[in-house]
Length: 433
Image (cartoon, rainbow, N blue to C red):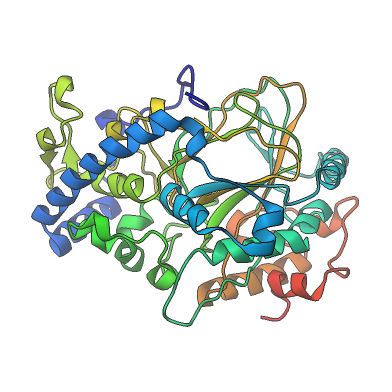
C-alpha cells in the first residue's frame, strides 16, 4: 500500500529489559492513577481501546498514506476547512496543506538559509554531532520571514480554530514559538527519532492537570476522550521534567514547512494517522503485562493487569515518549507508520501534539532535505507568559529557554532585527503581550 515502510529500520525496541521501575516518579505516577481510577476502569478501557485499534489499524493498512488529508492553501485561506476535511483531520490528527508559500519564494528562502548556516557553521550547534542536520538556530531571517508571512499566520489561525474551549481564556490568534531548522544532506542515515510522541513523556501520567486531559480514558470510557478540547489542556504542565526535548508551550499542531522537496526514503516524515486511540493505548500500556505465549499477544484479554511493578516502555523523563513494535504491538507499526505523500517547497505538514511520528531514517535523494519547524500555537494564559519572555530573550541575544541554547544569534553573520515586521506579525511574536 502507498507510503508504507518496506523494511523496518533499526529503531530501538522497548521491552521489560530496559524499564524504569526503580524511579520513584514513575512509581508515584502509576500508584496515583490506580488509586484515582481503579483497576476495573483501566481494564475496561484497555479492552475497548485494543478492540477499537483492530478496525482502526485495518483501515490504515488498507488506505496507506492516502488516509492523510491533503488540503490546498488557496482554498483553506479563503474558506477554511470543509466539514469533510475537519472530520478527517480530527480523526487522523494530521494533514498536509500545499502551497502555503509560493514555491519560488520557498526555494529562494532555502538558498538564503543554507548560506546563513554555512556562514555561521563555526558558531552554531547541531544534532547529531557526527552528522549535523538539526540546527540550533531560532531567530534567523529566513525562519522569521516564514513565521511572519501573512499566509502562514492565517493558516495557523485556521488550524488553531480546530480546537475548542468554553472557558473564554484562549483564542485561535497565533503566537510564534521558536523552534529550529533542518538541512539534511543526502545519504545521511538518521535513527535518532523513531516512532515517538512529543509534549511531555512521563508528564502525561505524573502531572495532575495534564493527567486530567485524559480522564475519560483512565475512567474506563476512552470513547469519550476529546483530543481537541483545549479547556483543560491549556493549563497542563508538559515539561514537569525540564529538558530540551520538552516544550513548555502547548502546540495545537507541530509543523514542517518544506524548503526543498522530499518524499519516502528521501528525508521525509512518517506519521501514525490516528490520534485518540493511539494516545489511549500508549497511556494504558504501563498498567498491563503481555502474555507469556507470543501467540496470545494480540488478544487484549490475555494481558494481565499489573500494579506491583512499574514499567513504562519507551518513557524517559528527559526525552520524548518513544514507542516500538515489541512494546506497543497492537499499533501494528510496520503496517501503520506511513510516509507522508511527496511534498514540495512551500508545502506544510501538520500533526496534533499527541500524534506518533518519526523522522525518515533514510535520505537517498540527490539534494538536501530542508524544513523549518513552525508550529500552530493558540493564545493561552500560560503560552503568553512564555512568548513574552521568549521575545525578551531573543532581543537580548539569548536563545529561548526551552532550547537551553547558548548562542548569541544577534552576533551571527547576516542577522536581521524584527523592525520590518507587520503589525500582525508583531502581535504573534509577542510585542504587545
